Image 1 (cartoon, rainbow, N blue to C red):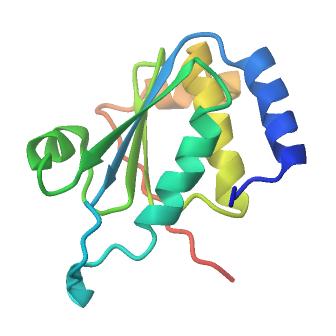
Image 2 (cartoon, one colour):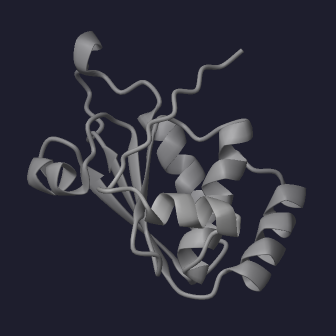
Length: 150
């Protein structure tokens, strides 16, 4: 059963048709499903996150989903800065990357969609003042945002 309803499919297809310019690759890190589970090592939301990303990337040929096993592809996970699963790294025309851990549901879903558009267009909607302040930083910065369901 799809996670996104028909109306949201139509809206996203329209947004992607108008807003996606260059390709974006989504690297999704998960764990292989197994008959046996170890509770401390089980990724309880990997399946739902993967399903959601499959639905989203199916809406545009400019979105490419690459699925990686977090354990088997540990070197790639490390290279891309993935520390936990489900983990998502999005790369496009912009020089930076966006990383996301967890299921991008609720308000976070919109953040992922905006991120895809920014990465595809090679720009962001940051104000000129914010761009100047960021350019003045002496070194690259990693920003981590913690979101909790309410």
